[in-house]
Image (cartoon, rainbow, N blue to C red; front, side, top):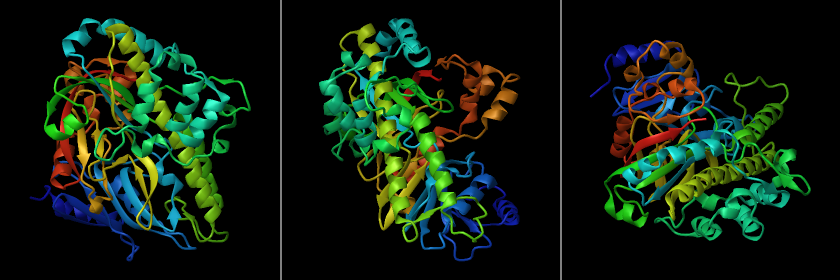
Length: 487
């Protein structure tokens, strides 16, 4: 079955300089004026809108080549595909050889998802909901959290990620972490929770360099009070309380410690200002390193080549890893603040970690690197977390390792309406029209509730179904929202 008016759509895209074809839920796209360019594939359900701006952004990204050598050898996009503000479409995945593209990962390096479960029933949770919410609002919105770090802890965090930070915390716990079960945190960092033998992707550790972090966060000694650590962030970031609504793969769910009726806690955040600092710096450096006298790429996307600047490629990957390490620890702290409040309000609640994984990251793979922007790794047997909107189901999945789509999956449902459109139209729309009926959203900004209303997002079920059919992922469990914290 084809989308309606397919031929008219393809002719319209051709007028915008795109050579596009369609077959079995997949659009193939390249720039019309680059005949030997890499063809990118976009997996979309038949009823989803095809956005020319996003296709153009993906085709531009797929065509990036460095004059000294280096190219994109494979490109694709997941079903939450939509235009990005910085010229990179959300949901883009590219495999590069002999080059890296700093702009392709975006400014929120290692933004990602983290999922915990707890043996609390929905009735038990709701009985003390108000007390729990007030304490969490203090931590997430009013600064009552205490994530004070020593200078040594911050250097270890940037250098080695979760394991390095934990080593320091085991010897010298600071702030709220004094009340944490450090041994539980250490076991979750090291321990096996799935067939891949880990609870955090890459163990929460990449090869960073603390000297590449913002100077004010890595002093020689003393204490660091970083206003970004343990914060959710704006936009579509959230912390959500959910209920395990349905288990579909009982064997994997059991192995991962997930059962129907449990409460779940999902964290969506990243590297905050550290990621912005490093991403902005390296977009500028990549542009400055472009060969003198050569015309800039029309897309204004600048790669770094291992042939002309191997030292810059290595330094960029080290800098990205430094921000990624911060992102891993930020999600851990957001979850740990929540786990501490759970124990204060509900008693001895273990709330173990199921998995933590990134969706804005560059990783070595194949002959070079794979860069994902708003798409998560989905290697064979690896847990995958795909959230819906705050009024829709979220899903715990298992990766299938589909090479056609670069071992990737979507990071969510994907926006269908911009925040500007929602704010402009939202005041005249009812709760039902916005999809907010029955949604329990905890925020200090009413505009955030409207910007992130379920009506802004594509239907998650279609996003899940088309990826299952394409053998990218399989469903393990479905989770329904209970309440959502939005900064």
